[in-house]
Image (tube, rainbow, N blue to C red; front, side):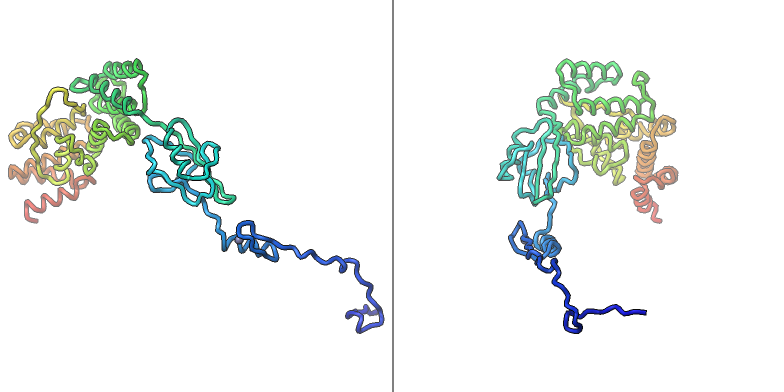
Length: 366
Ligand SMILES: [Zn+2]
């Protein structure tokens, strides 16, 4: 066996340890200074800790209509005002690559030219965010023209595929085919499908699809015609709360109020020359008339409304509306048994169960 000498410095032994040549090289007293506040740290780790604590990295945001844009691409369908826009946490702002010292100026420049695609770049230290805004605006003049054509072709007239073609070619002549016009066309197609107009080339079931496409295209357009069509589609889908606010469509709005309360409201409508007549499908037309033309009219029309509800070519939503209206009509005539029959048909429908239970509960005292 043997021993290995354990050196303890050179105190314990006689052997002198030679100076290591490495000891001569003192580690450079490296300093790590913060690029943001110039505070100094002994190590990269400490500097890193400081940066996180003292200068948290914030995500810069472009703010549109009060909410931060989270995606890198947005499509604008409505004209922006300067007040609709803001930036948050941005130390530097760029528009289409050009640096702006003042974010306000950048936003004002953006608002001044809302066309095509414009790119806003915001940075906070190393955090950079880019938002591409694509403007798909329809000018007021184009809106007006589209609505005039729509009125010329469809107002107070029988709908047909021929009429749709006429609408299309008028728009093309005026170089005015846009999303809005497309949406109006979808609404008309939806009505034709719902009314089973043969020339539409659409199956009955497709009416809802067409209505959905119309709602999408009309979403950002706030003209009376657009709002009227949206209200009519929502009524067709038994979403009455939004359709009863359509004050410029008094009959539809009164019918929607009836559907949520069970109280018939008579509406006098005078048609003045050049007034806009919105095309609606024939079931909606019958339901709206029944609910708003007064008690005498109801008595004469009840039988035919019942007939409509018994055909197979009717949507579930429309059948529910008719059963509910007939329930209320029979209550009005004190025909309780008949009313109860209709009640059994609507008591499970989402749109009517609450109001129907309420009305029947009130009337027969149970
Ligand atoms: Zn710092």
